[in-house]
Length: 72
Image 1 (cartoon, rainbow, N blue to C red):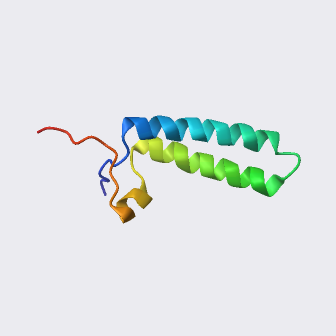
Image 2 (cartoon, rainbow, N blue to C red):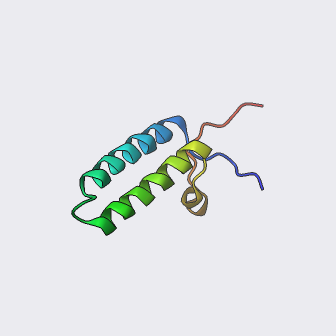
Image 3 (cartoon, helix red, strand yellow):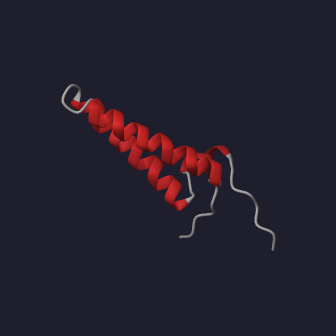
């Protein structure tokens, strides 16, 4: 099954930066609030994977596409 890209380059950059910030906050909270740290790590993983594959399932559900159309 092939997914159509719907995450643009600016959107990818924002996702990578947010993911890095979430990991840092998760590490800082690791000894204090374990469940929140785990939730932040999972959310960071989802952001990273959607940026890597240029595909977001929620964007598909809402009809959003931030990827520039390729000229054929």
